[in-house]
Image 1 (cartoon, rainbow, N blue to C red):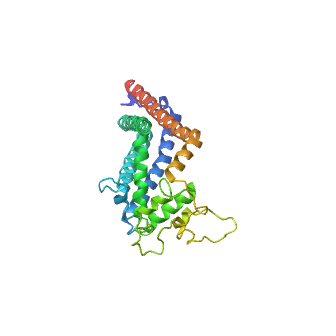
Image 2 (image 1 turned 90 degrees about the horizontal axis):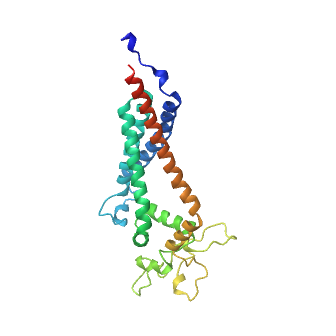
Image 3 (image 1 turned 135 degrees about the vertical axis):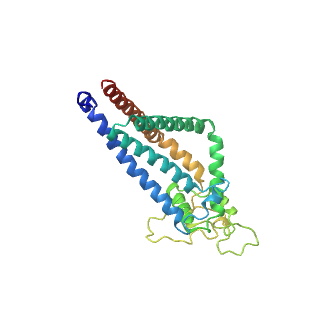
Length: 265
């Protein structure tokens, strides 16, 4: 066996350790994603009703994130060990599944463009379901308030969407103090106020004028944000795609080097 020693110098060390370092960074990130999703799942009361508002037939999206994170974690592990140990099987596994993920992302992007009206309807349905469950979960409530404050919007397509909530609807039999109102996150911000007025939305929709709340819905505001930041969004997706293609090419290059060395034994 002394005459058939493995010629490690023929394998590009730069490519080998670049793939290893590349996957270590993404491996850590994926581990964090899995850990956070697991924490959300096992923490009592945290987004406890999220499966009921996503209209996914009882499927909890936290499980979906955990599965995706777990798959990506395994993929990163295969890339790290495959590069470090010069294992062609793990490197081929890494490049093939990275190519499948790239294809799925590309397909998702095309379908999202083709069925954008359906996605818009689903977003409207999702927001309306959130409005109905606004008081059912404190974390969901904080998420809705953050969204409405950030987008400067109210409801899916307008403030009247809050009629879907039993506490804010304008029916005569509603005994709630918040009747015909909106959450404080719908109110326009007063620069002179340092303390948030949580009662600013009381009875606001019963009045003839609505100058003190954001009248635009969150769906149109989200569409406007996408249009204003189209270059940024497209750049992020293109950057991620190029990184994936780059990783596939590096892995295949390293596999070719290893197989060439093995053929010379």
